[in-house]
Every structure is written in structure tokens, then in C-alpha cells.
Length: 490
Image 1 (cartoon, rainbow, N blue to C red):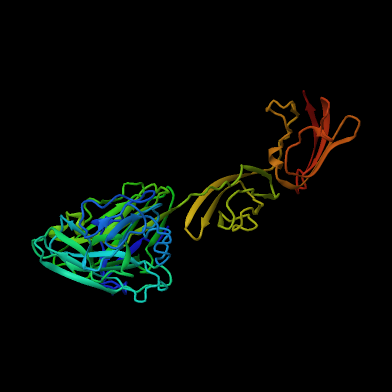
Image 2 (cartoon, helix red, strand yellow):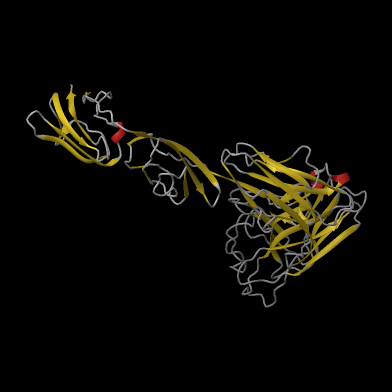
């Protein structure tokens, strides 16, 4: 079984982006995500937003124009960087906004965000790239300088952030810029603007992508009680287990509320868990499936908890499901008293093996030990994967016989019934000597040890029907020699 106690510690972290005053804590799910979509060729003009630039339905927009593109190539005699794709990960033919700025200050991009929560921190950010090459034949290159502004609907500025001059580079490099702010009391809608502060001419040409707006709060680090940096646990397929989750939340909300969520990795996303609104939660998993499980803690001001745009979340706690494996302890065996035989178990290699009970075994910690029992015994094989703690078991019964029962007839006609001369007590015996003669005293079968039953063949051919005679020496201390006849019937 696995360690079950998990601790979540919420701490405030310093900003992780040098070029942005972004959220210095954990984030909620994005309220706004603008990645300009995807498609082949030039994308459509923007709708539902405001921009001070005209749309160009083609590559390489001129001064005062913008285009929606999924790549750039040799613009303005190769003065721009060639971009083979946009910034958004894993979106084939994803679009970005490409802007050739004018000589005058103006709005690159502006949009409204509604249904906000009061007294809540939000992060506004965007990825931007300076398109001009330092080798462009300009003489003087104008560097982009963009102001991010968040305003009330009446134009009152809540907060601004300046990117400063975005330097050109030898290679194209997307950088994240942004800032965070707190919504004033009573404000549920704001206008976000990206404003051009530099002139046009040679330079001040940018690509913009992945504009996001999301709530911001304390960081919640997830890990086990023994290792706070670990946020991955494991369970075995088809097993039941209970994982105790807990949280320690630092200051940041005046009246915080909590809500645990689960993601079953089945396409339904995150869902609230009923009656799990405190800092402790027992995550009970029954008959674990291979999809695995994720848990996280949502935190918000109590008055805002019912609005998903107000919540911030811990990093997901992942519970991975390890695939089950099977073991086979082998078929039940019969062995003569004081004789030894191999246990022929089958299991994956490289795991831990344990036979129980360990009596009469050459080594109870290997897959195929030799057993020399003094009495009939049922052995259980337990196989453990030490890296995951998953186990599997199977049993085999070893019957100890004082005498052997030898069949006196068999029918090797390939009908699947009684085709072999099977002496169950001797199967697997390594000491026994078996010889079979025809009526003229010629040996037609002999075996040192008895690993498999005789099929009545000599040199690959079935012997004629009739009576044959055997001598079996079991090498046992008593009742060791058996003589008799066996009839082959066709």
C-alpha cells in the first residue's frame, strides 16, 4: 500500500517572470483566453474587440495595419524574423496577431471582461515578440513599448503596466508580459487595453498571442507529508484506498472559503466534490481504474466562492494507477514422499517473490524453488513490485504420496482424450528412471526424470497397439521399484 497522507502548504512566491508583474501566487482557471484561433492561410479580421489598426487580408502588414497569421516569411526583404508558428502550444496552424505600428500612439488591442468578483486579484498577461531583426537596414530601429491598462467602463484607470522597450534579438523570442490588480468594491466589468507607446518607421513591429485574464491568489504547494515537493501518488489497478489530503492556507483572503475538486481524466474536467469544504479531505478511491485521478483545492473569498471566475487553485495532486499484473503459481503437483520437485511458477521478472509457508523449500524468495515436502502443503506465491507496492498472488497445492498410481492403458489417437501415459505423482520428478519394453524386450521408451508424459512414440512414430511392459525406479527409500504392463489401444 502507499503512503496516504498529503499536505498542501500555501505560501506566497516572488514573481517568476522578469519582464512581467504577473501574479505572485497561484492562479485560477482563465476567465479569458485569446489565442486568435487556428486555420490555414490568413485568418479573419478581429471581431468583438477594439483596435486602432486596419485589417490586411494578407502577409506582411504595412504601417497602420494588422494581420491574423500562423507564420511569417521574408517580410520586408527579410527585415523581420521568420516565425514558423504562433506561441500557443499544440495548436496546428494556430493564429497570432501581427501588427505594424504607426507613428502615433494608439490601441493595439482592447476588450471587455465581465462577471468579475470584487476584492479579487486578477492577472492580465500576453506573449509578445519583437519582429524586427537587429540587422535590418534602418539606421535607427524603433523598439516596441506597450502599456497594459485596466480601466472601469467609465475610463477610470485601475492599474497600468509598461513593458518598457522590447529589444530586438538575433533570434525570435516570445516573452510573457503582464501585471496583476485587485478589482475595486462593486466593480464586475473592466476594459483591458494594450497601448502602443512608440513611433512607427523601421521597427515597432510585433506579434501578439495568448492573451489571458485569470484570478490570482496564494500559491498552494502539494506534496506528501514526507516530501512536500512531491505531488504524485500511486494506487494499484482495481484496488481500494483512502488518501488523506489536508491544506494549510496562508493569509490573502479576509474570509476564505475552500472547495475540493476532482478530475477523473475522462474528459469531464474538474468538478466540485460534495461536502468537502474544509482544509481536510479523505479521498476514497474504489476499484481504481487506469485513467488515474487528480485532486485540487479551490480557494476564494466566501462571498465569491460560487463564481468560478473568482477561485484560485492548488497545483493538481495526481494519483497514478499502476497496471495490474498476474502471476501463476503453476498447476497442482503430486510428489513421492522424500522426493523433490520444482515449483513451476510464472510471473514478471525483476520483482520480489515470496512463498508461504517457507517450509520444505530450497529458497522461499525465488520464483521457482525446489520443494521436498514431508506432508501435503498448499503454497501461496506473493509477487510485489517494490517501486509501486502493487502485489499479486496465486496458490499451488503439492500433494505428498506414499505410493504411485500408474495407468494400465491409454489411447494415443489424437482425439484429445487419454492420448498420453500420464503418471501424475511423477510429473516433474528429476530422480526417477522409467523404461518401457515391447514384448521382445526391446526398450521403446526411457527417461531419466519425468518432465512430461509419454506419447507412445518411438523415433517420432506411434508404436503399434498392444501390451508393453515398464520398470520404474523412483529412487525413494521405500516402495521404490514398480513393474507392470500398459496397453496401447488405437
